[in-house]
Image (cartoon, rainbow, N blue to C red):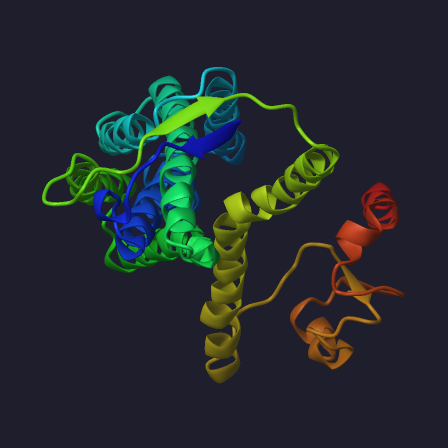
Length: 327
């Protein structure tokens, strides 16, 4: 898709600064809320809505598929930039608000799909609206400031998720809060695009042009980078939560029991202790007095790291099976 500016004087064109800030805010809402709000909210939804990892994956996939569908629609039938931005931002606000008003997986999936479609429209619309303005002002280098909105939006949404988790706000209330934020900024951007005290943007006529060889190379590279970051970007908070919970389990049990050990705590059932010799987190000296608390303990020192059950599961399973057979 190529764009060409119709004749327009600079006096009739929005300023470069206005184009930058309008595009930045639009992308912050579209990418931060429309696409990536689910990432910091997934742990909250797991906690208070019982969303499993598989269900979370399906919700994330629905949003990604929606983003792809929206992009294909924009490619096949290029929309008017201002209309695409306005429709997309208003839709994102409405779909995000609706996420906090239902508890069902299917409506959630539909809303995330539609938010993905709307996000694609905003990205395409902002690009087609802001880039010609910056070019006409001979400030095309400021395009990076426009697309900084992606990072700004993700950062802001992450902070909202952090506050929600720290204050036990809950996933429903957080979705509604993000929807309200999206609606507020969508209104501001729509007023700018509607010419509320600002000259209208230059007319743009759209048409298709064959993709260059460089574009055909860039497309799969862009797709590969997206595939590389989208999985950790979606599930990193959930992984971090599991790690933090595991660390908290150690903190709540080990130091307290070391300071005030129970004198009556003895294990009378058969116990097998499998100790990785290369464990950097729990040294072998930690188990020196284990027999005093578990007289029937059987000890096996195995070459391996702290993650032995994951790196050599068959070996660990064999030791467990042999131990059980002897009981």
